[in-house]
Image (cartoon, rainbow, N blue to C red; front, side):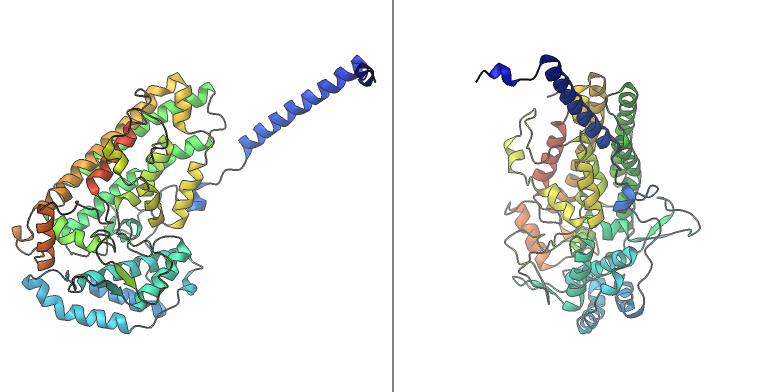
Length: 477
């Protein structure tokens, strides 16, 4: 058979070809258009308030009814308990009360939290109260070397239950210590850094309060970061002249916000004494793995331990604002991208899963916010890379973030690395126990790295984060 005779006459053939081509073009255009107008999930769906960011707009109300025993115990713990390692006269005076307080907690019934699950703020309040109670309980016990700390089921079971409902770790977190741990100075006025007062304190010191206040100021300043990110996510087109001009302005504005957060971090120095922080405050924050992988951790009584629990302590690495900034600027903490300069051997040894693991210590809705942000079709770095007019503006923002991480390293060095070489008795009233003395001696002898409250090797971790930020700069790449 002659194949030519099978084909239809030329006019018919070309008419069909044109119809197919137009169909393909129309489908492509329609798909592109639909992608542009697809309704975007607004930040409010992730419990992000336009005015207060990741803070709730109002203080969390006290729990009532049978849950009031938790609130009463937390109120009594504030100022009534001392570190179990503290052998000072003031601490010994509180020891009898601490024993009675812990006995009362052990005797409590195991309360079911399901009644609270229908209200987000009540659930958050329950997590905060229980998490503070757990750390008060564990760290007020005189230590037993080589033995795990047992968290009684009256705390462990409801904390795990409410944590699973909220979708994050059953332990004290950044949210519990900073985002939810405040009341308004003037209830008639909105939340601001000048109109909030932190309620719960482990050490009872002004230094601890100042530490939380500085963290809150940085977080509140970060609300502008969230607005910049949201504006970028709302752009229907990132390649037209109007959008490019806005992105350039916003990246310049972003650099200024990041620099102001760096100033806030540095401002903690005159208001929070490093020695007080390291010996009086920081021990209360430590989680199950704070002493390292070879030391006994915590046991949650009444909880099936076949499912591993995230039990590290609170950390600035749990700030969702900073994670949002990293995602927006496409900082590659996992070293998946080939960027210059190449990672150093120390970078490669760092915990590349740290930032991802820290997300598990954020409220579940905030984790979802980050996941949604990660799903943007084009990162601002990719847009800047393909748009010469944006490269300098992008690099300015990333360089500001690198400066912030340099500041964080300096603060960590002063407050943790340097203080790890100090002695607890250098100031009257500091905790001075055999356990701390042994830990201090081990650090001086180089038997272990200086760790964060979550058990991470601090110096290596912070430098790796700083260097990953530097590799995002386009000029170097």
